[in-house]
Length: 245
Image (cartoon, rainbow, N blue to C red; front, top):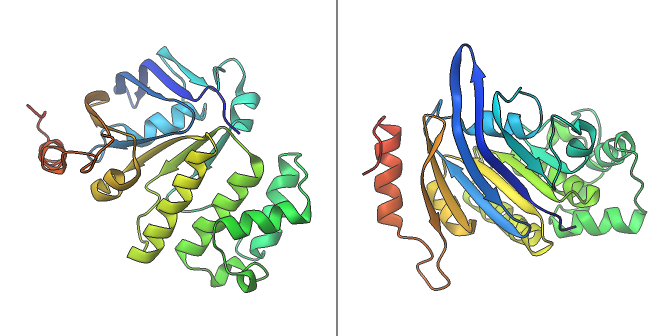
């Protein structure tokens, strides 16, 4: 499933007459989890939308598995699985029917054994697979969406506030799924307000302020993986509208 990962190079995106991204640069190689933190309006979601090719880029470049969404939009979308804060699946369909339907839209066929294995990997109870999503918790919806991502075998996964509204056990299960995907060489870019969650799973944590990457931290090979006090101080300053020292 591995590929060339994701890179944003000096990215400038305008929205409403102002620069929302102002020279944003970051890289997410295959088999890597990058957590992008920042306050409201800092440009986190805009970075995801630009990566998906949903927003025009004024300057700079996005590369998804080596492809530019401005030049190869279909190839880029085929290479990305996107998980929004509110998972967009069909309420009246079962988990299995949702997966079958979206695989057919992507013109990808999978055997029954592959689908059963994907649901097993995300730890969705077998009895839930035949239930309509209208009865699902957010955690169960996330598991269904991740099963679909596994089955699509995309090299890049984009996550927008994925643990918002999840209880502690569901959050722990979700982080375990991300580590499984990382082990499959998927490049994962996650925008989040969840600092503790980022510390648990990320290989790199970036802090975006006013559309620019203000700070970046790499996980250490020994515990603690990150200096939580330094991260918390920088994140708190950013949310208050100040640039970290």
